Image (cartoon, rainbow, N blue to C red; front, side):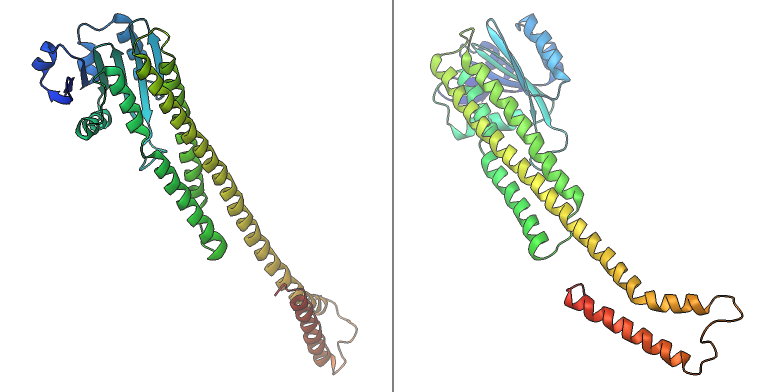
Length: 307
């Protein structure tokens, strides 16, 4: 369902008929099917948006008189899943968001409700849209890093068994978010250049702030990604230590039973004559030898802190 806002004294929702008769800038959210049948849109813009429709990337392209772009916004509940995809078309008096979901619609509703628009223009509305997309992301990245720190503490102090898939999910999430922030920073920088003079200088400069914020977010995501690599190395080290401990236990058990294995192997041979078989104290001697050698090995292993 289409949603339309009129930018007069404030950002207010209007009907389709009111939007058509409006003599002030209009912002709207429509479906991709509705956009294909929309009149009054530059043909190059329609073709550009059609090419962006299938791509899962955040990108902007500037044309004389208008610009088009697309967003691929990761879901913070599951950054490694499918992103929310939508695109936009901006000209002097018209800003259109094309989506089949609800992300753009929700962001515009929050902008209208907050009343933060100081300039009633499409470019300023797009700037606020970019800003709202990123507004809580520093806190989100902080929570993600805190979760990873808790996992590290659980491994080191409590010996918790953190799975490899969990650690890889942290790395994939930070990588996906870092790529998204880099793309948004590039988009905002291109719009801020305003090479075709589509907006007021103040509105163009505002996008520089968005670009700087996205750059900081990308840097933070890169730090978290490196932290994920360190967490994976710690996890792998713990696995190696556990394997070494198991192998050490097997080795100790093998060594402890080596004397008994030698004796049973010696006297289990199918020979008619073996030295000492007829000696009456042979059994006692073998038992004593086994006790002495086993005790000696145990004392040695304990002194080396292997037991």
